[in-house]
Amino acid sequence: MEKLETFTSPREPKLFAPSKLSPQKIATLSYRDGLIYLFQTKAVYPIAAQDLEQSGTVVLSVELDKDGKLIGFKIHQKSDYKVLNEAALETAAHIKIYKPLPRTLHPYATFLVPIHYL
Image (cartoon, rainbow, N blue to C red; front, side, top):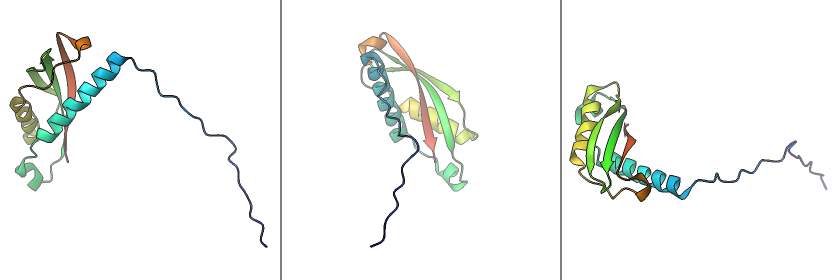
C-alpha cells in the first residue's frame, strides 16, 4: 500500500469577524443599494452607443427629500461618451420618487449613484 504525504499550511487562515455597523449605517447602505438598483434597472442603454461599442459608467449625484422624492440630480463623474452621460440624466429625470428616507437621514440626503453601460 502506497503512503500518501500530507501537507499542512504554514499558517492558519485568519477569520474575520463582521464589522460592527450601527443600525443607522446599515439602513443607509441598504437604502443606497436599493436606489442604485432602481437606477440601473431603469437605465436605457442607447442603441447608438451599443452600435459603436461605447461603454462606461456615469456617476450621478442624486438628492432626495424625506419622502423619497427626487429633488435634484447632476453628473458627479462623466463617462467618456456624451450619449451615455445624457442617457443617465434621462434616467434620473424619469425617476420621480423612491421610498421614504430612513429617519436617520431626514430631512434630505444625497447619494452617489453609478449607472453602468456595458
